[in-house]
Length: 418
Ligand SMILES: [Zn+2]
Image (tube, rainbow, N blue to C red; front, side, top):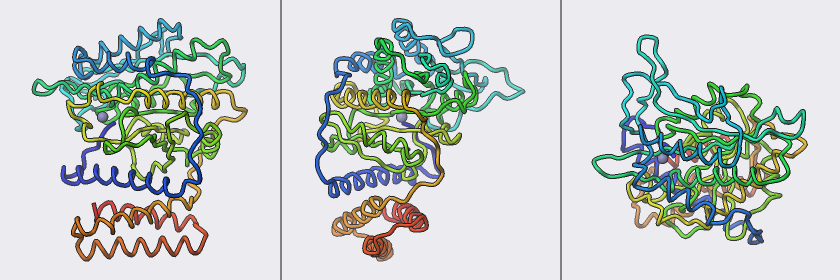
């Protein structure tokens, strides 16, 4: 997961808690409106499949997977693809796509926008590598269409002697990708569309790895019909005991919504669909979003160990990682074999559930008023938002204009109240 630095760190840390709170509130809203609990099915991928990947990638030995240490993590990914007999993804039969930088780049990593494109005046050198493999589709026509599962495998490195091990961020997502790749390699039946597996480097540096990939894809980028990524899928939002994975992006491709609905969720896991505009760009879906490629982003949310040396394998819920991996495996199989690939839409259809969600947020906020000591202005903003949501629900229709109001209101709540 990445964070874009804004003008002040104060704003940034507030934004963290805002995102956290909105997600939590949306989740609670979903609980409140759910008709019945999901039945659940047995997942193909087991905790024992994903655990060794997380334990290796987040071991002290790998030093936090930044700078020179990403080379060892990259070698692990490549070795896995070789063992699975998957085809190399990049030019000249290579599993690796080198990412050039400039001499001014340092191997010390942080979230600042330090990584820059090659400049004419400075000698390019290699600052990172994406690692990828693929399975060619079985259908003579559809094999040109690609389903890409891409996750970042880098993290924050070692700072002042402390290793940022990044077990959740994002050894969990990487483990999921590696295991799904293995499942595809074991299957006797090849998918109709081609399926691509890629580990992105330098996500923690302004998504540089996935940006480089989208700018220099092995095939025309429009051949990518679906991009799926996951970042932090082994903990839970705010350390609360939630069985939830948040799935974002399906609002931009109606077919994905029905695919998710049809698939349901593995036993013990609950899927909460959200609009990605509520959180903005937080991981490698950003560059694909920019190209209007249908995408899904899965995450179990931020927690108190986010971007600290405390993000360690002992705290990972491997049942959850396995369940989410099984879910993604099913989504990819479905998309790879469907008659039609998902199609992008800019128009996000208004969904009245979102009004209920924001209403629920305002209720939670007003309930917390006693402890939080809102200013009069803050209380006014929340109360007005609540009233308008109630009016919309009474009206019973939710138009595109209403949704614009809702987004503005959500942002106003985020900026003024949290
Ligand atoms: Zn991160």
